[in-house]
Length: 119
Image (cartoon, helix red, strand yellow):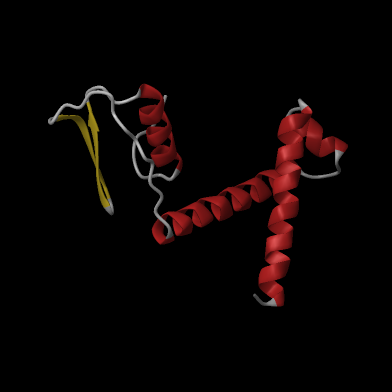
């Protein structure tokens, strides 16, 4: 990793901390920016760059290292009740599947931008 990449990473970490601090402060973005000598446009620009970097990192991780959840159903239906087609495979959810595992799986897929806008 070159000096430019290291500098960029350090900046992104600093900006991510600023976003986190702002969100945890209980203040509006405008109030937090005023208290910290920052223009709201600068804050939103940095927030967007952090979000893009995180999204890119998640996409790279998803492509390079698939993860698996081991699941042992208590009852199994041979016909899936839901089929989700993904870029690199298919996810079948069968009747009797644990709802917490379904929810976590769909949330993860949604966060990765692979499917399902969760409400």
